Length: 200
Image (cartoon, rainbow, N blue to C red; front, side, top):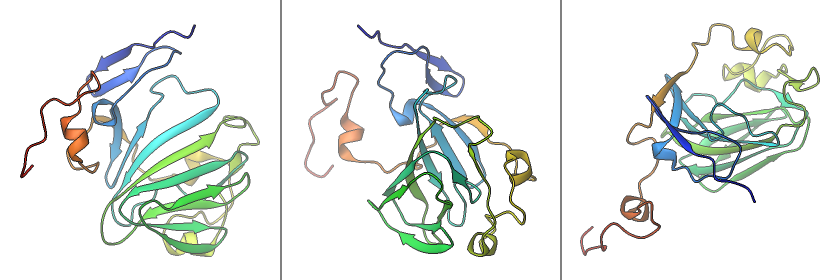
């Protein structure tokens, strides 16, 4: 039987502690933030060994990552707002519920659209993460035009992100995620904290 992993309270929100199963609300979790981009790594300090699952909130014009390719599959789902996908040198606008599939070796990145912030769920395999063959930051004209590309291909993260300030741990900030009536009324027991009323 797989045990439940406890959720540890930190100064910046809850993080899972241990390798078991758990339920974690994004608004209660520990986030990381720097100007224009907020990210939630659901696995906390101990990375999931097989799959990474992250949530990103991108301000208009802000990138999820520098343009790159990975040796593992990556997939993205736009949960709210609009974004711009740069993939294999092409630009594709994204709207809510658009799904992006990147097979291994696909060069890509996602940028917040110019009008409103967007929320994107990112899922990626980790078979090659942390190895010499993980992938690379690749040169691309479209990426350079949007300020999210490198001028010379590199596998060094520090080179690709030179000059980018580090993100800092923080609690969830109201407004990052869309609010629904269901989320507002939901409690930990799985029911509703109060009946929905007319005019809510």
